[in-house]
Image (cartoon, rainbow, N blue to C red; front, side, top):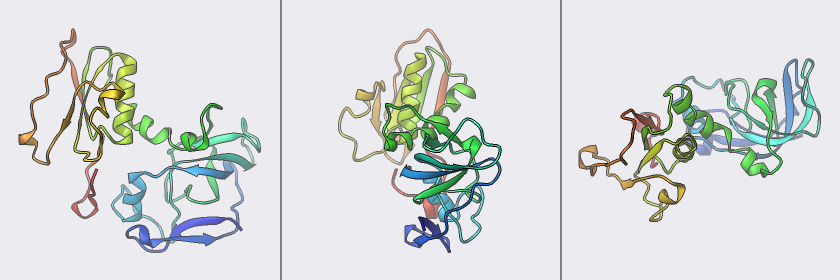
Length: 234
């Protein structure tokens, strides 16, 4: 039987248990994949500790992101077949599906083939941050010349936002409190300005963006609000 990660009570990572369970049978519109790699996300730690948008129904599985190969498809599934290399798109409820395990059952709308030039680790870690950062384009209408202030810029979502801003010709202005980033870390990713800010925003040094023909500016908060009890270092 495959090993699956579940938790029977909410809390820190110590509540996670590796259990041997029967492989789930895909039903209509579902796909079973053999997992090669998984991604870890803050949303999952929030869900596990009961600080997410909705609460777990115990015992619960966990995980939004995974890559692997299709093992079995359910009735009505088209466009996929056993052996296809796929990754999961985080577009489902953690109450219903999860990816932490040797196999993962997923809805077909949340499964996509990923490029052959990507490794399984890369295939498992491309969706969450880029879909989140894509809000700059879809909702913020980011375009060439915009000044874009990106907080928590050393995070995966922050780095994705920097790349998307560069892709459309906007000007990413990066801020971070990351104590582990080497000098030039964000500059090498083509972020205009890297400021090591303290927790007191009043002490932040001023940011002077490049001159631009556009006066429009955007603020992208890459780190969501967290309850005090669940807040950790960025």
